[in-house]
Image 1: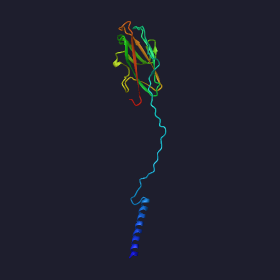
Image 2: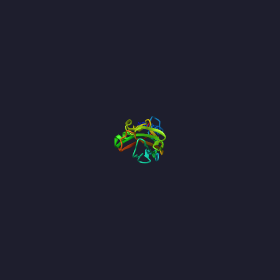
Image 3: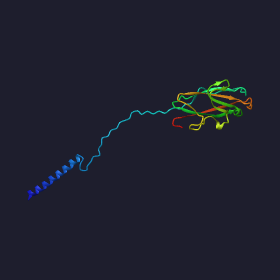
Image 4: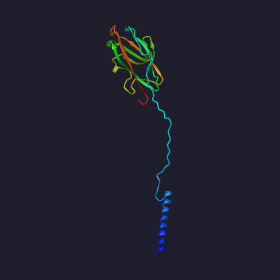
Length: 196
């Protein structure tokens, strides 16, 4: 009986070893519902991405548009001012009266004409951009509007470009005599790209 028992235990053990070996073989080839979560991966750099911002610069050919002494109703004065864009972005600009010093009565009486053009004697030639009082106009605006975004009458200059403005001032007979006034013209520029 011992021989039969040994054969029976040996047979069962051999059967289990064979069954275990079959399960392991199935797992090795991906069968039997057993799977692996391993995967090939790769990574690499994207070299030297470059970024640079544009520049917006509004310049002028001189610091003063004009200086007029001894104005009389019969003798207007005209002078030019170069407006430049040495930056890398196209810009648009507006001009307004920034501040007034001295006689506000004289500054308010003076009449101003601005053109995109040149001076000829006491007048300006070219396309007229403004004609009216030197100060006291609608919110101080002379050319365009200083609010952000495109406005009516604003001037556009391409990157690296320029234009010439002519300013002509005349004194009506009602202007006070012997008075002196200073007026700061404020130029405000902004980019046109992505800024309708």
